[in-house]
Image 1 (cartoon, rainbow, N blue to C red):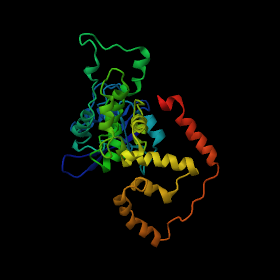
Image 2 (cartoon, rainbow, N blue to C red):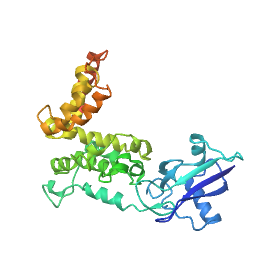
Image 3 (tube, helix red, strand yellow):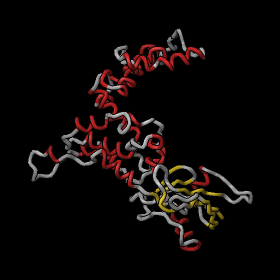
Image 4 (cartoon, rainbow, N blue to C red):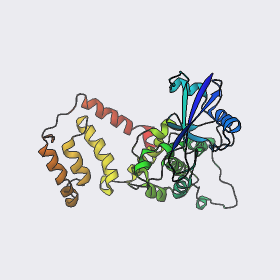
Length: 330
């Protein structure tokens, strides 16, 4: 069958142009197979990264039909089934673009320096200070090693970083790939820097609280690392070690849970005052809410009363059941 591949082509500081290539393909052909044929048979100037062709190296990350993926993993049949699009002549189309959140070097090749720098910022190495006998290797039981498997599957392809909405609006955020690796260090029993690591990751912009929980990293990860889940687990470790008064991000989470337990949903009259005003102890924080409060009052949007939701007791029981569970407290 014939398929049109619409490739976004670009050089640094130049306008993006779309170039179309028509190929006769089979449904089982991978996107990387098709790009290779375009380069070998039609246009030798087309630039993209590749290496193993087997979902191991992560080199061929790019945006395929609007979301980041590995070109060696996605095939034509999958793409046409998931994202059917045709031209006026009825020929199906597949759109290929460079990954996001990184500047384009040429065509589908992006500059990944910010990606690697963000990874380096979380110190993704096991500390050797924990060795009791430096000459001996670190030994782990199969169960201890198994805890690291999911994060260890990360091949650093950049798909999660490319789709990260938090990184898009906040360049200081280290990104889901880095924090997934960070969680691996936090739960590695060989590492001796757990407490200092958690304090380092406990920041509003660069660390775990910069995550907006959009789930895009989980959605596009080709290796099922689930970076957002790992970020959540780091947050949980931080929350166990801190009181609500310690910082606004921690207070935000704790107040939210407490209010839902009380009324089944959030009492908006209290939420901002408790979080920003630090339980009415931060006068400056409370004063900062005055302009917003006046605008809400002027537009008659302020809720003067609060009615608990139906099934509040059931909601409270569910939350307490989760909080008391073994998995929650591990």
